[in-house]
Length: 411
Image (tube, rainbow, N blue to C red):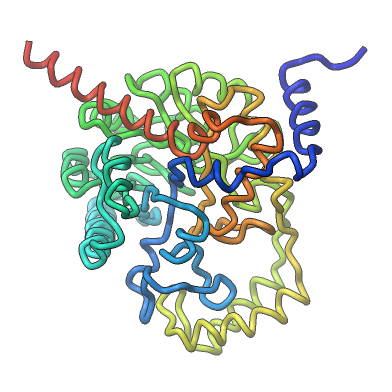
């Protein structure tokens, strides 16, 4: 007897839609340009302090490992996005919390400084309705988000400080557990949210900040959905029923997220889409290459970065790593659409933070997603929701909760 479960039907529908020919989407570029194209998770702020790097210049991913800049946003039809204040999870405790706070304040100021310096091209967005207003002024909009809540974990009143700086989306955790929540990629510690994490949810609602549950454990996600008065977003995640990885979400939770008005933004992170074995020899060779060049992560000069890229070619050839492609990405996208519909699905490449797959190496690849969606039968109204409408709706809902709570306190 054939399997007629919702998951099986969604998988079958995804396979059918992916098989549709490209010729079915003749007007895809026009439809792409008509939408507000918004990515909910750019790690690009990490590049802003790099020597010789400017967001106004066109860069090459192979040469300098960057994926977002103004020329490529224009080519990809990208109108703006959430630029992340990312803080790696360091030591917990008073000293660690202070270091995380200081790091995040500096990163937030780098984003604001970039916008101020390039005011003819970019403008800071502080509310959902700002996106359309900024586009009407022929500029790209810049929302700010916070990935990992460690900068505020030691003092949740700092959430208002970062809100005042412009942060409108905030997540409690990253790869390792924080003082606020368990991570999807760490051993359980709190059983979901910590007591402070529950207060974090309430404070985000009070301030009108969208809660981002990407990187949170399943139990933490469950609790955030239950506790939050506003919809929850997964700013860069995938579908566990397509590929079983802790960073992905199962269909039951996907439906619970949608039932609360939330959205999953499908990301393009290869290791969350295809099996990706660790290759110790490759890791050792990359470490030795970096040591020999005297380089340290993003603090490379342009010449060092080119030398590193050249040296990496032979390492990639000797120890190749499997990479996901656009078909893998669309399996997650079409599956999510089949399970919860176009009101609850969006896009994030996780660019400049490890994202990028074959056929979607940087933001210039985004029109191909639209082409495939149109070929699969999705309408302009659907495209508008998927590319920006859903994320902006969630932000607007968070603003409405903030206003209602404020009014309630005044009664």
